[in-house]
Image (cartoon, rainbow over all chains, first blue to last red; front, side, top):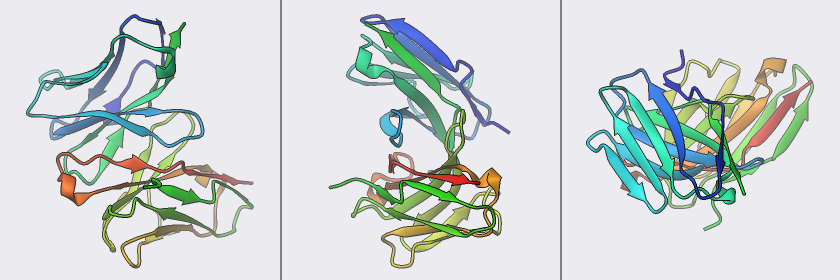
Length: 111
Length: 117
């Protein structure tokens, strides 16, 4: 049972424009959410996180939005750069010990 | 700080053989996680250690799988009697308890890719 879902397997965006990656979850007990970026042949790299007490967290070009009522979070990248091309995973946790990952969205930023 | 390292990076084995992978976490991190990732999927949680104690195990971790972290530093993941379905990327991650359970940031290693023939 997939508790964290990323329904868009791929996304293409023009350089300089906004990239919006979406993630939905089913477990209302999740209270901590993360986004990871993964390049081929490397492990995932932490990008940004948000706890359920917030609805927005910003770090440079990256902003994560959390809508608890909709069980939805999104990652905004502005402006998008070719180096952002990678697979992006969202993850969620309710205990801090076990993390559930989505299936990933492959982002391509076109120069 | 050299990050999380995993060895070997690639392992090819025949069905029925045993394999063992090693993970060296970031030195000051007391939490260590093992995940499995198959093609087109995200990482799936296998097990979690805090220091040397194995505190959580996923149902995915059948009795052919065993993980240890004997001194609270490096960890090993052993798969006995490998099956073709075990073919996957095995990822290790570590984090620091000092960050607190609600702000845990896991740092991943590059993974060990297992191919079972």
